[in-house]
Amino acid sequence: METFRMRLRFLSNPRISGIILPATLFQQLQLRQRQKIKVLLGKKEVVATVLQDKRNPDTNVMKVTTLLQTELGIPHPGLIQLKLEGSALRIGPSIGIVTTGIRRDPKQPIGPRTSFFYNLLQAQEGKGVFYYIFSPTDVDWESNTVKAWFLRRSKSGGYFWKKHVTAMPDVVYDRIPSRSAEKHEAVQEFKYRLASYPNLPMFNQGFFNKWGVHQLLYPNPEVNEHIPETYTSPSLTTVRDLLRKYPIVYLKPKNGSLGYGIVKVVRQAGGGFTASYHTGSGNVKKQFSKLSSLYQHVFRSRRVSAYLAQQGISLMTFHGRPFDFRVHLHKNQQNEWVVSCTAAKVAGSGSVTTHVRTGGTVIPGDDLLQHLFGKQKPLMTQRISDASIRLATAIELAKGIDLGELGLDMGIDTQGHVWMFEANSKPGRSIFKHARLREADHESRKLLVDYSCYLANF
Image (cartoon, rainbow, N blue to C red):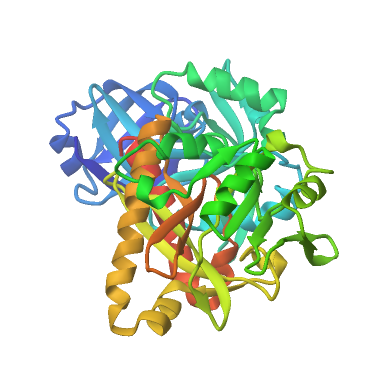
């Protein structure tokens, strides 16, 4: 059924649950004057009386009485979408972002992460949605309501945070911030209870584990050409065998992020091996004549079972420094994967990884590809994009969960072949701080709303 974009206004009437629609729309929906109809917001429903506005037959303004507003928990007036679904009128969509660490402070309701969510919620502009943040402990399962924070525009044009009790949403976007927060009892219980809700999709659930992703993709002939050879809990023999095949091997924590704990092992041409890694005080590079000594050194303070050994790729370099790409992908309103941003991350001097915190720098992907490939740039861009979309499709299919965004770490080797090193279900947004990636940032946040509308069936 067609969705209509309406301007929602509240009409002061504390005694009647009523909804007043312009006469033209009223007739189009084949409604009867004073008909009793179910009105839905998110997971809340109320029976209301529907009336036609004969004075303003062609406006796009719908009016809701203050009683119906209270009963449904409609948080604010403004642009919204309306559709007749079966014999019920749906207002919405209502999109909830679930996270932890929410406070009572109206200036910084999510503490130091407030600006992250402030930016996310700004993408609601002009979309006609109710968009909010809540924590697992803010849900009242009995009444189907949520204590939620909304970002509202003030008359002066700025924004402010406002708390409302509103309906349980149509769709939930999982932004639980860490693996440790994921283990909290409240988070576990919330996810368990949400799973038993009828038709309440939650996307980007949980965190990926590097080995888990490898096991899903390596056997898949559609994408395995992009996946480096990898082993879990690597023994000395495994590392030795990999170094016979490849001059570089990476030892990586299975659940690591931001490049923490990664060790780069290089077989030296004249014999011996080097191990490079990052510590709190900087980049470290150590020489070893025997691989067994290097192995002992690395796993003296690290659990072998928490690590992977991975084929090292001889990455292309930019001004003598290796680089890889963060490819940010999103599902759009048609449920198709699109690339919203490609940023190149160039390794810092002496660093094992391209992460910004170890001295790496971010450059728009276009600039770097132009610099390296010139006229061949469109071809390379297409190659990276095609590989990324195939990988995202394969991950979502193998995982069997709704995914609306992914951050893939990709690289190009010296032969021009495209590789994927890592997939993130909760990609950070630090690449978007680059002045030239602001538009991509805006596009990426907008796509999150579009995909939510798709899942909410609006």
